[in-house]
Image (cartoon, rainbow, N blue to C red; front, side):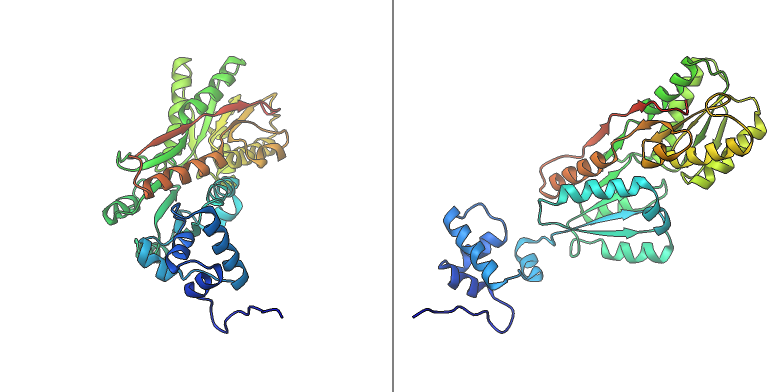
Length: 340
């Protein structure tokens, strides 16, 4: 005679898991909460019982015990259009997701651009809803870092803020030296009138890449020639047109993002300029866009997915209370293609 085990009519309980596994309720709780204080045999029995019963932990009850929500927020201070179309954001999300894959943490994504969006997000960013926050594309006037610090929420920024708060961790690219290396390469190849299309100056990345450009042209005693964009392709088109109107004889341009560089290439072609014979172009990021332009872009490689992974590692350390605020700077290097 055989005995069949049947699942309860309702949601399986912790007690049912314990009975099936032949262990105490406390042992099941420790397994569910990831405690190392369980023997391998007991852990295996509990995991088998969970699988057989289809037990799903009650997150609300678990949060009362652990004081954790098992959720982290990724907040991007840009529009949905940019988040879902620009390669940088896709790379960041891939890196963050891969680093979270081996944890119990769930990720939720929020775009904060309008006042209403920001208000809803600020109301949600509390320890009752998330264990920590990742912030990307932080603008200079953004109050979120200070607000999160006041609430005691572990926070890590993707990108150096314009005004650095030593109490907040961030991960960034070596934007200054990456930009400087690109411009020095243009100058060393014989270009004499090197312009730049810089990014927004309320973002650390926009500031730093312009600093790198200025350092290179100053050392070469070359007059700076600067226009600004917002990292979008259309802003690259407009900025390139303005540069050509100011200096029709320019022979090179360093552009602070690949999307803007793609726009600059389009504007140069519309004006009958050959690339690189008449004007050399270098972008920044080494995104898929860089391989799709005609000609393909010489660009500065930045490890975007690594940035996302480092952000998660720092955040996990802050959540566990292990580390003091840390600033990580990732290396960049020039990728040579046909545009320069």
